Amino acid sequence: DIQMTQSPSSLSASVGDRVTITCRASQSIATYLNWYQQIAGKAPKLLIYAASDLQTGVPSRFSGSGSGTEFTLTLSSLQPDDFATYYCQQSYSSPYTFGQGTKLEIK
Amino acid sequence: QVQLQQWGGGLLKPSETLSLNCDVSGVSLRGYQWSWIRQPPGKGLEWIGEINYSGTSNYNPSLKSRVTISVDSSKNQFSLEVRSVTAADTAVYYCARDDLGSGIDYWGQGTLATVSS
Image (cartoon, rainbow over all chains, first blue to last red; front, side):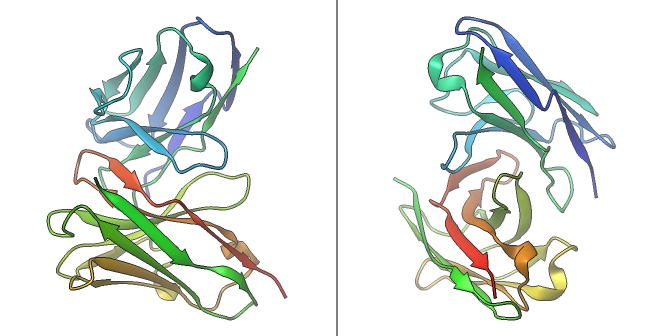
C-alpha cells in the first residue's frame, strides 16, 4: 500500500493567515492526489483533485501543488469556515489511501 | 442534483454482519466508481472498496476477506456487507462517488455502526 503522511498533524492559525499543509507519498503517485476538508460531524468535501485542479464551487483561496511524492495545500487567507480537518488521498493505486489528517484550529 | 442517501448500520454484536445501502439520485451509476469509506470515532478515513455499474468490484486487501460490495443498477443503489464484525469495525461509514481521477466528489451523509457486546 502507498503510505500518505501529512504534516503538521495540527496547526493553529488566525483569520487572514496563509497556511500550508504538506502531504508526502511513500512512492511516486504522479499527480494522482486529492485534498478534502472535513468539518466535525460532516462528510468530507472535495477541494482539489489531480494535485492542483480546484473543484467547482471551492473558493480560489484554496490551491494545491506538487507531483511525484510531495504535495502542498495552501489556504491564502484563512476564513472562519476554513477551520476544519484536511486530508490528502492518493488515487494512483488501490487501495486509495488517505493521510492521517491535519487539524486546523483557531489561534 | 446528485444525492447519495444511505441507511443501515446501528448497533451490532461481535460476529454479526453489517449491512449498508446507498441510494443514488440525480445521476446514473454508469461511468463512475461507487465507493465505501469509513472513519472510526476520532480517527482518519479508510477506503474500503468500490464497484462500478457492471458490478466489477475492488477491495482494500485489509478487509477483502470480510467485505462484499454489490450493485443494483435497476434501483440505482449499491450496498456494503461486512461480515464477522468486531469492535474495530465501529465507525461512521460513508458511501461516495469517485469521479475516476477527479476525486471523490459526492458523499452520503454517513451512518454510524457500533459493535459492542
